[in-house]
Length: 472
Image (cartoon, rainbow, N blue to C red; front, side, top):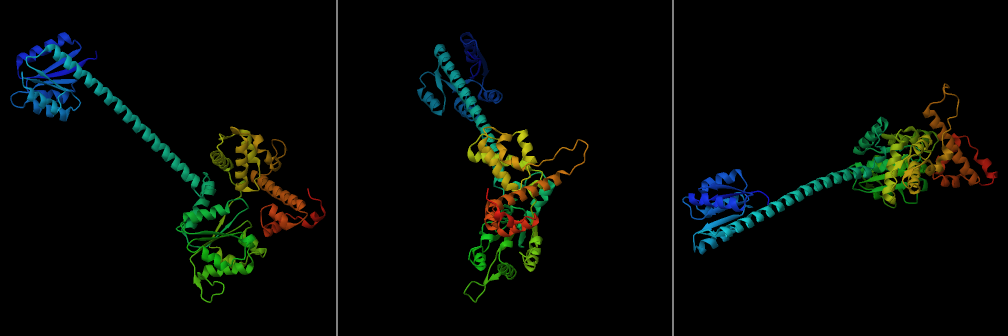
C-alpha cells in the first residue's frame, strides 16, 4: 500500500489517543497526525496536504461544519470524514450535503471506520493521479502549443520571404543590398522610374515589387508590352491604371510619337481621351523597362532624348547574373520552390552540380537559372547531380590550361567573354534556323526586333548571309 498521511481532529483527548493507535495496528503504512481544535487543524493543513481528514462535528469554538468549509476552500481535493453522535442522522446528511465523503457515528465501529478511511485515501490517490495526469497533459499541450507557435512563426517568416517581391535579391551581398535599398526608396517616391537590365534579370519582378511596396499596392498594376502594342490608345491605358502603376515593358520599342504622349501625360497629369475635347486628370505612377541601356537606345534613335531626360529621375540598373555571387543561393531557393510545387523530395545540390552552375555564363540570367533548376528538380530523385544539368554543357566557360603560374584573365573577364560568346552563338543559330528573318529570329529568342537588331550590330553579325544558308 502506498504510504499515506491523515489528520484526525477532535476535542476529546481519549479519542485522539485511541483512533491513531487503532489505525497504526490495522494500517501500518499510515501516518497519523492529530489536532484538538479546528484552529490547530487549520495550522497543520496550511503546511501539509493530507490524504484524508477526519473531524468531529461538535467542537467548541469553530465546529466541524465550519472546518469542512475551510478544508474545501484550502484543500478541495482532500476527502473529509465527519464524526457524529449516535442517531444524529440530520447532522450526518448535512455533512454529506456540504461535501463530506462519509460519516462515522459514535461509538465508532472501528472496522467500518478503517474501511471508510481506506476508501477515502484510495479516492484521494486516484484524484491525485488524475490531477498529475491532467497537469502532464496540460504541460504537453503547452509544449505542443509553443512548438506549433514556433513552427507557425517559422512558416510565416518563410512565407514572407517566399511572397516577398524582392526574394531573388535577398542574398548577403553589398551590391544587392544597395539595389534593394534603391528599390525600396523608389517605391516610396512618386517619380517615374526607369529600369534597365539584360533579358531575364527580373525587371518586371522589380517593377511589381515597387508597386507592392508602395502606397499604390491596392490599386491596378497595368502592364503594356510595347514590342507588341495593341491599338489601344495610350490615353486609355493611363485611365485603366488610375491610382496605380502603369508598366511599360520594353518602352524603347514604343513608337516615337507614343513616347512623347507618355511624357506629356506624366508631366501634365492629364490625358485627352479620343474624341473628347476635355482633358481628364490621371494619377498614375509609371515604370518603364528596357533590355537595352537607355542611353544606348537614345544614341541608336529608338528612345527620344527629351523623353529620356523627362523620365530619368530614378534609374535602376539590374546586374546580369554572371556579375552576381549568389548563384548557388538562388539555385537552392529555386529548388526549394520547385520541390514544394511538384511534390518532389529533392532538396540538395551536389558539389559537382554546383561547379557546373558556377561555370555557366547564364545568358538568360535569373529566368534561365530558375527554369534550369525547376527542370533539374523534376529529373532528380533526391540530390541534383551534374547529369541533371546536361543542357548547360554547351554554355560552360572554358578556362583553358596555360600552366599553374600563368597569369590569365580575371573571372569577371572570363564570364563576360563567355556570356558575349554564348549570346553571339544563340543569335547566329536563330538567324540560321530562320533563314535570316530577323523578325522570326527575335520571336524565337523571345525578344523584340529592335533589341535583336542592336545585338546583331554589337556582335558584327551579317544577317544577310544566313538567307542563303539552309536551316538547321
